[in-house]
Image (cartoon, rainbow, N blue to C red; front, side):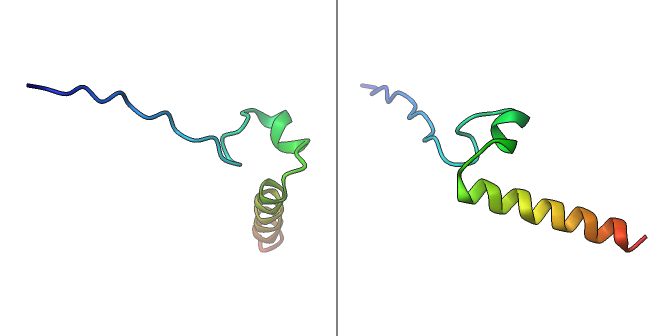
Length: 50
């Protein structure tokens, strides 16, 4: 006899709560803001090193 187990939907977290550039730029979530800050600092660090 076989038992069917339905797949468990993935939980919504701070990265995939909403998609799109607007949701990232207008966020109030401190974790998303930290990722944006890290990305922009890294970008300008590499641009400044050229």
